[in-house]
Length: 166
Image 1 (cartoon, rainbow, N blue to C red):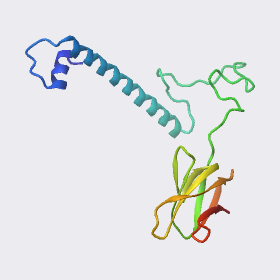
Image 2 (image 1 turned 90 degrees about the vertical axis):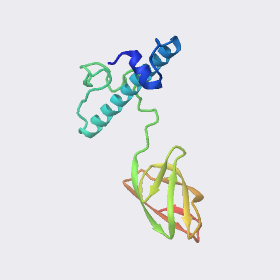
Image 3 (image 1 turned 45 degrees about the horizontal axis):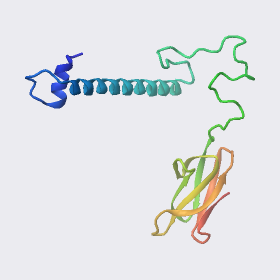
Image 4 (image 1 turned 180 degrees about the horizontal axis):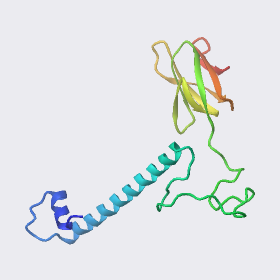
C-alpha cells in the first residue's frame, strides 16, 4: 500500500510540499475504513451469489469459512438456531409466473416494496395493479390476490377498468 502522504497528494491533488495536517490524516483514515467496509460488502454479496449459483453447495461465507451442517443433536428442527426464522415467522412470498390477457397496453404489480412487470414473475399474495389502456399512462386500478400456484393469468380490460385473476 502506498504511503498515506502519497495518497493524500493524489486524492486532494494538492502540492505536497508540506506534511499533511491532522484533518487530512483523519480524512484518509475515514476513507480507508469506508473502502474496507465496501470491500467486505462486495465479498459478502459475491459469496451469496456463489452459493445461489452453485446448486446449494456450501460456499465460503463471512470470515472465509464454508457453512457446515449442524452437528448431530444440535439445533433440532423443533429448535431453530439463534437468529434463524421459526416456521411461524413470515416467509417471503413464492414468486409465480403471471401472464397477461385483455387489452391493457402495460401492466405492473406492486406489493408496496417492489414493482413487477406483467408478463413476468410476481410474489403470491395481495398486490396492487397499475395498468394503462390505450394512450393513458399507468394508474392504480385495483388490488388482487395472486394464488399460491405456479402460474396465474391476469385479465385486464378497459371495459372493466381493471384486472382480475383467472
